Image 1 (cartoon, rainbow over the protein chains, first blue to last red):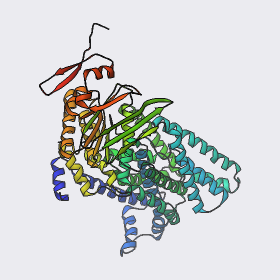
Image 2: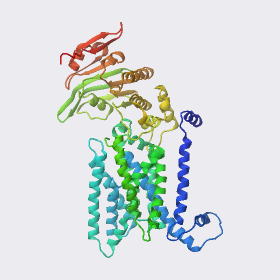
Image 3: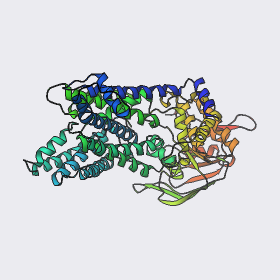
Image 4: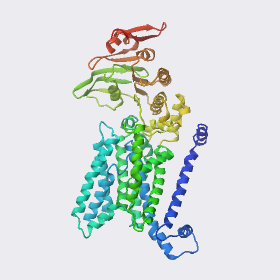
Length: 354
Length: 247
């Protein structure tokens, strides 16, 4: 059967691939619009037209018709910040989607599972002992992975993890690492290291620069790449251990590769922007409503939606009041009620029994 | 071919079954009968490799497909996506199923007359359809041995027949070796070649259906009176003699 015949066959059965193509295009257009809107918003407003022209100048020759200060704000302040927010959103959402697949549970996210707390401790400790950004990312990664491994071991009984056990294990592991973070703060030098740790932990894109774009971009893109390459294996893994194993999948190996990728992505986001919760839980869930559960589609859609979401949340964070609100507060204010709603809804569908 | 020799499984110092042995020849259909909790599922899982033996060994020469008693899927994938997951053993790490893999999945669905379900989400399927899709997924792996755990126990009579007919058809057509557990001796006498009767942890009996499956053995197996009934000159069935007055 050729691709074309297959497509005709599909059409007869009422299934149109073009629907998905439309979804992709719609999301890409939404992302570009979001970036352009976000670039104009702020305490100093720049109109949409100027923003577009400033960006176009780098690619083609457009005569300068804007104030030099506009260009500096767009290119040196807002563009790196929006890039970091977009990359962080995509990373968190994809990490969440993969995590939900691995735990075959649509109600887990990087924060619930404790990876954020683990990474937060790793990062805080790194700030305490050195100034190196590389050490910050590395330690955030190591402790993020350690936290995931601990939750994984604690929550599983007889080869399966119930949502209750997962959430409880996440609370336990998060509490443990939070205590370690407090200990780090307690011993930190109050004039120098303590404020650095506190500001970093609050989670903000305010300190974004092109260096940070690289710092977060490289690990996140790599992690998302690994997860996307394993999209089929993730589908199989999300059936549960027993089915995956009887289907001949190398369950343990693939699970650890994906967990490492998730820890890498989460750690990079934590390192660059602090702890931003709930994105990895809510966005994949919402994306699944848009495009179905197949990871082939879910991974890119989650990434795009997460990107768009966090860019807008960040814009709100820096425009809603004269003093900037940490992004993590807004994502939690939106995410927690949605999680509560999903948790209640899920008990009707029997996810809690899994 | 499946060979089981001196196989034992132990939970908490109690034998589920002990020193069990049989050989199911290639291309034959075998059934395992036994009351609840006799270790039928443990035996199947041991054959598939999902359960470790405490003693003895199991030898299988070819790829095995496994269909569990009831398959819950958290994320409601479309039927085609589920069946193509049967191709997992043929898909390398970091790769996705090829066009050929999808063609095999489609062909398997066509063989089982499930074309109309190809893009349905799993959650929308009935119990019988789900069981057929699971069989399709196992067959898509190009297994030569099919192991099924009570494939019909959750189904109504009409759907039981659909499953048995589908199994019989694919077994005959492609020379599959089939082993399944069941609570339906009448079906075993109609479609199976061999039967294993698991009386208790220590005792079991393996043999050809014609010689092994009789009213006397079934009475011993279930502990209730059974009667053999002739349906025609070639077919016979078994019915339990359940009295409502003697309780």
